[in-house]
Length: 326
Ligand code: IYT
Ligand code: CU
Ligand code: CU
Image (cartoon, rainbow, N blue to C red; front, side):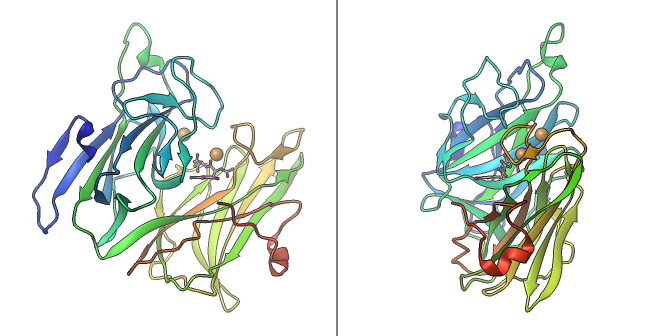
């Protein structure tokens, strides 16, 4: 059970399940370098947990973003804090490791201005025993670290309060990730595109989306294509806070034979080519779809990646050159 963490507050239980608010916070850390990414893991292997909401415990002056990941195996041990950045800086006070060793998925994202997220009624993330998520990993991106240095020497407990229940909800949430590889030549605008056909006989209901790029992203959009007709799922300037936003219009479903597609428009005003890659000097093109299924099973396919420009554009879709990584 998740009781290894300090405060587990029992709340009123309106349904047969026990509702618990679990504080998943940094243990009074003092990162010393700006742009430090710290991770902490908790094991949730012993029982099923159904996460129905996320309450941020963060200050936008200090934390740039907070991400909650599900892992099969975490990058660090329990009761350990490790460096888990997009490798922009490495902090000597902590060991550096990946977020997850295996089975990575994003569950929730907070960035400045993001309010708490309550999932739709009867929707939850099923984590723990018999699921692909045996650990939860909290990642905090520390932007401003001056308050952690002398004379203030403050300690930080940024993180999330997870609203959980032990009783299953009728609907199950998950996240589907669309993204690309590729490169943008100097002084140009480039389109990073991906598209995949849903092959499984599962109907999903997207309800939130998140975009992610680095400095060159200008607009990222996602679509469902059914019988040649395009319906927007979401569209955002990735320079805005990278949190989950409500889909453009609710009630869009995606089923077998539909195509999910995404595009990132990037502008490179620099004097060199920029590639998709892991550091802040590289780029990324990601469109995350948070969805639920009314009834299990959910999708096995969790992402849709292409090699991106200059080798793959939507026009290449019929050649079936799209790659499904993982
Ligand atoms: C190369 C790339 O696009 N990396 C992204 C997306 C990504 C996320 C996960 C790729 C894989 C994953 O298992 I989860 I393979 C990326 O790193 N995006 C960052 C996060 O660190 C996930 C982001 O903020 O969206
Ligand atoms: Cu950040
Ligand atoms: Cu990135």
